[in-house]
Image (cartoon, rainbow, N blue to C red; front, side, top):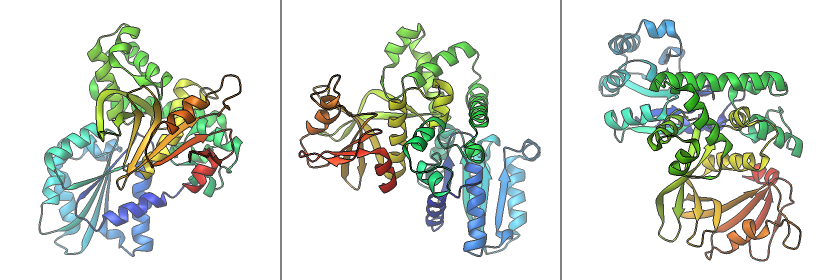
Length: 401
């Protein structure tokens, strides 16, 4: 079964009114190629765009790629258009695989004799963003493709909105490749391992010519073992007995390949991003489980899940720590409004043993402003406290988000 990414198709159609180049990024195998195909079908079936007006290149295909240069690509597109004044849609998958692709896209984009809407995908966000900012400043739109979410799987009847199935999602995530096999644990786990190996080899090892596999795996594993925790490159270098610059470089490479997501600290009072340590999360929960273990660290996976949902809805998502050291997992910003979000597997009342109430709820209540404050839990019922803090079960939160 294939899940139609309706939200992203709507976004792409909205942006089609702009001539800007659309750039779709995301970890390899997340479903960028599928999204382009679904969007092409939408154009043909819902908007009556002729198949002839949709031009597609897949640079994952080494046979096609082997015959292309940037000059040949330009000639191929122009030959297809053949001086027509109609609007054409150009889709190029994994564009960074073609040497000097920027020259071809710039030439086509600036050709005033053709009407062409350009959509590109890529797995390496830094390569794309650097090239785009150099060649197409102010003339591009970035779209970060996130995993298939829990609601999409429920709407497709692959999962049900139950406590058992939300835990299944925390283990397996939402990579497009695993969806047809979602209820077969063995196939899903093998597929996730293949996805990681593929992403690491093509977008990290091969691209950056990494020599030490042992060093890479040590850093990679450490990051995934510490998802959602404050990350200091200096401290990690000391713990792993590695050079500081080695840690920084490997983090950058993993981030560029969209394997990890960095979250910065935000100072609410000064409304500025702090240049301090960051937190790192996995771009997909299944990828995290494949590295860190299944049915483990459910609390951290819940926090990772919440982050992915927040990233799909808010303009900016940060983590927060005040001058007293009190932390809140996320502070989200949209339309000049903030929302504070705390995440915990289970909230334990104040008078009970091993209570985490003060850390989770107390930290929210210590923030003296009027913005919404919520605590998302896996195993608690939803309620609103006298202080105004909302305790929300994750199933209720996702369903109504």
